[in-house]
Length: 205
Image 1 (spheres, one colour):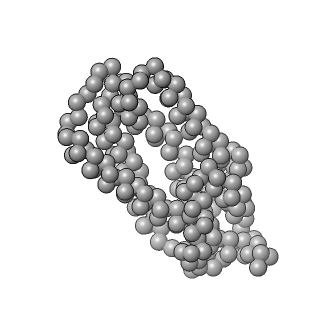
Image 2: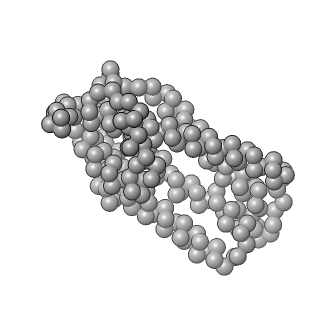
Image 3: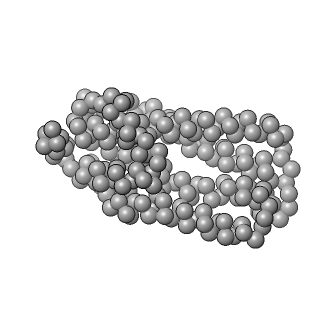
């Protein structure tokens, strides 16, 4: 087993800072810069450049759960990781596509100090953007379910149903609140051996 990734071994406050405080600080800094330009198109034109730093820590955290933490499951309790990787890849791709579609739709007054005409009609850009957004939400729902199921299965040492994972799935969706519930449990799992996890499960029963 490789060394524990930082976002799985870090304390809750540290992960909260990386996943929430730092991204919010980046957004606030961007808004301060944009304060001197009152064009609404400016906000959307720089969106691709501030979105990725905001989302990257959250994606890395989810990836670590789905890959590293999943490896701690007994062979008989593991589930299809290939679907998780595909959903994760589609989510990242669609996020980048949707960001640059907004950039193309609303222009780039901030970057070029001039308005850019969209290369397609507004409707022709909005429809692909809407489709990409729907794909992002669907893939995020699956990734959240997969990771919630991974955490629950490790804690209980038995196969879990969707209804038993739904609460943790919701915590992943509302990560600023959910991190306080999930991260202490992730810490315990990450630092435990398979035998210790079975003992923890037996004590909780």
